Length: 254
Image 1 (tube, rainbow, N blue to C red):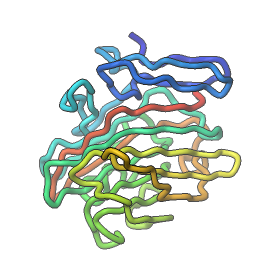
Image 2 (tube, rainbow, N blue to C red):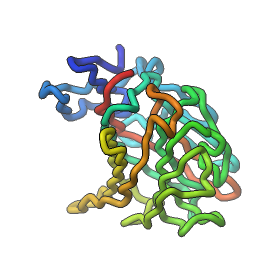
Image 3 (cartoon, rainbow, N blue to C red):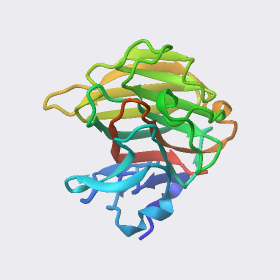
Image 4 (tube, one colour):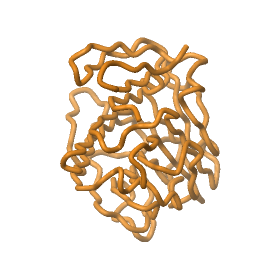
């Protein structure tokens, strides 16, 4: 089964990016108003997902398949990218759930990236969060360990140029990033070069909070108009299992 489909207007909605749901995901609305149904991923996910380093696909969230970026060992780094490129000069939205667990304290966190290095990109372990050294990139960190440059052990940040030692913007998370699943939503307005990141707990009645609202040109940061989006994560001397699932993309294909 192909895990993505193209609709009118060049909109890409990737079922990979329902990530690896074992049941039908909810519908999404295209820019032209078409209702789209995302189908579950089976063995066909491999053609739409590039896994590197310690990243793997597992089934530990019940009916959901999961991208496990790190597996709880020391000095791990993993990345997972959509093999379908996205037009970074256009607006898009993506959402996902994350579960960073099996470590108290845990480290080091995950990052969502738009990057131009390619589907095999993988950066440094530990405080590098798996993206250090990916120079053509814009990263959104979900960081669970306080390294020297970090404001805390529970923060989000926007990072340019693959250098996690310098934050373009940072914010304290509105709930613990470690130990319980959470949902994140990233919206990019290409016309205004505006990146917004929303986060909410999965607890009943939890509300979504806007934590980052940053001016950034994704195409310029990625060094290309047509780039890859996905995730990295790493561990160092402190560890955790770092999972991403129910990943959806509403974006223009390259």
